[in-house]
Image (cartoon, rainbow, N blue to C red; front, side):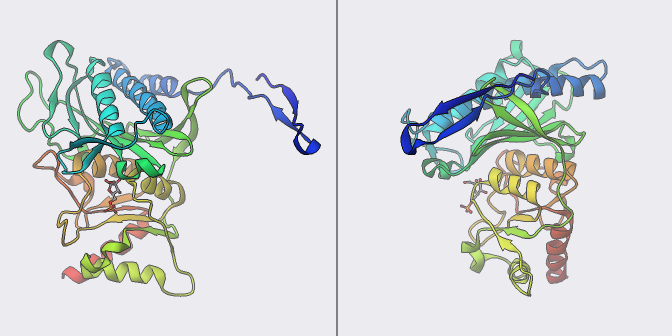
Length: 353
Ligand code: P6P
């Protein structure tokens, strides 16, 4: 390690601060290095296509991170003037993030089909560039929070083409149990990628001084029980009775849970993974299937949570057991610490018998 000390005297108030120069770890575990090691460890004889795909995803995320950090200065805030398939206003950063993901994935030579929250139809990669993976993604989730600088994120899941030969209709509508790898990027006070390829969950923080994601949170696990519940209480009148009863129970007694809701799924899920507790987006009168989308929000987050020892359910069955019938299908979701999710499922079951 190289360390050094540099003192810069501040003329103001007559005191000085000592700024330790950044220490450079000459053996840091970068995300690229980690993915390669995982391939050697778990996919002996692997083609390296997944490694290549994750490397391309990493490039897209680094570019989105740079754009998010400069959005205000670069006038990237504000509405792009379009409306996406969800009927939501498309913010300029949304468009840029979507283009970055699509271009980086198409040029990875490892993907054949892309499903984006921003595109009504799936995107088939040109034949000469096709690889064996199908990628579903929300390029910039939480975009309603962009202009007020609340944390936002990107979410992705990776499936395999289910057969040899030409793509066929419905190839992207697979069970969550077919996921090969999934994760999210959080553009918060730091930029972080949380990733699983089926052997646990690891967190990598972007070190801007070297432009690399570095392993900072190895083998992440979700506590069996937390002390935080996360739900948009503005919709309380529209929840089913079981959800009303469960949320009320979290506020009662001498030791109530804390309530936290950011309104950005990646930020709410990341806090739940780190601190424990439960994140819920249940069905409401307006959204009888909930709001969050199965293929590129619910499933990737459910995959990460299960890999970390948590649970993710639609209220009846595990999210990963779902098989969507449409690209942008939605589902209610109850996700987080195993015991907390089991508690809400027990209340739902009680109300449904
Ligand atoms: P509501 C953001 O728009 C998003 O898609 C998720 O990131 C977030 O969890 C949810 O919607 C918030 O929805 O209805 O609470 O504003």
